[in-house]
Amino acid sequence: MASLAESGFDPLARTCQFMLTEEAHHMFVGETGVMRIIQRTCEVMRELRTDDPERSARRWVIDLPMLQRFMHFHYSVSLDLFGRSSRRMAPLTSPRVSRGRYHETRIADDHR
Image: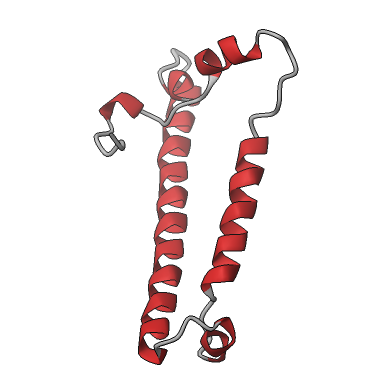
């Protein structure tokens, strides 16, 4: 998408730049939303001094086991987006074709 944002065809370049910005916004909203849900669950668990999912549910928060199930589900579904290759050379070529984040070289928050 970033290469299309630098296209010589101006309408395509302007549209792609907007889409990149819009997608970054959606990712931010999703990530902060999940963080708020987890934070509120932990606050209620601390107040109640328990990790019992049923007691947490009575306080209208999503319990940690359910959050963990959904994280496992969405992680595996996200991996499926890239497909599977049964080719003999797949282990050698897959690192060359994997997708990175937009402007990945400018991001300084990578784990070391």
